Image (cartoon, rainbow over all chains, first blue to last red; front, side, top):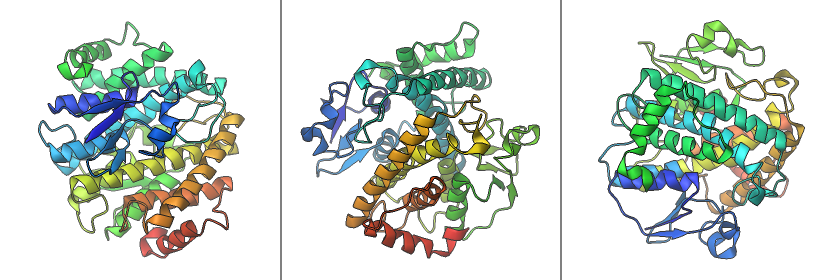
Length: 210
Length: 210
């Protein structure tokens, strides 16, 4: 298999972090999103949707969507478990993972894609319709990101990890979102100590720099 | 367990459809989103995030996020299988399910929440920050919805169901999105015959009206 990714982009980072936690090394190929390489014919022939990360299996089968790729890896390499062992744990982890995406990632991405010069006419990802940036949406995204960070700090005051007592994919998504938020200059406040402590613990994992 | 839902809203409908495919009946309680009942203290005491659907277990545990609720149900009641049996099938179904959400649902929801009078100051869902509507975002959402529908028609020209040869959760999400799109007056065009044929097949399933 081969992972098409971009080193700096948040979604590929989620999958690299996940693979590294599993102790796996997968051949990788870089595709540069800001210059539009993900929308060039060479990459669209691999994934017509034009998004990263994209995992290509040896028979040519393509899987995109970070969490779908992670679930495939989890199925092939169940240990260490990152997505749950029984129905309630699986659902709880998925709930928190999705909360990080919908409450965190979407707001940060809205802020970024609607303000970064490189995406001036490409506020939508991949081959979705070209779209002009909407400054009000960037502002709304910043507010969502700050709200999400406050909620995450509250969660981490009562739970050592995002989904509960142990490290899971929900921590990976949350950590990558916190890092991504720096791109739009949203950072934890000094009062958000639970978030800061958790962030330091996650950052110290060797896989966090994958 | 008890499912908090709203009959007309798209996300609760996904879970009701899923439960009905499993042949399950779960006690339900209605919460009205347009009037703000999801943000009233009574419901926030159950789920501080203020979103529907919310599943509450008998011990008080709460699961939100439609797909997390479905995964819990799938774990407890594996048949008929709707989310995959082996790593590749699970990943493929999840990929298509998420494509329907990110390429379809998000655009439709953006169009709706940024134009419907009931959500004039509540363009964000649940307890996310109150936000004024952004007309340009409603317009962008409509364009995304139309693009997604064209992509879905293309997919259904080559595959009988969204994720492949059989009915899965990806069809549920896609079907509910097609129905939701009517709220913003986006409908399949006459040329989109594969989509129309698939839609008629899905609509004929008894669970589709759950």
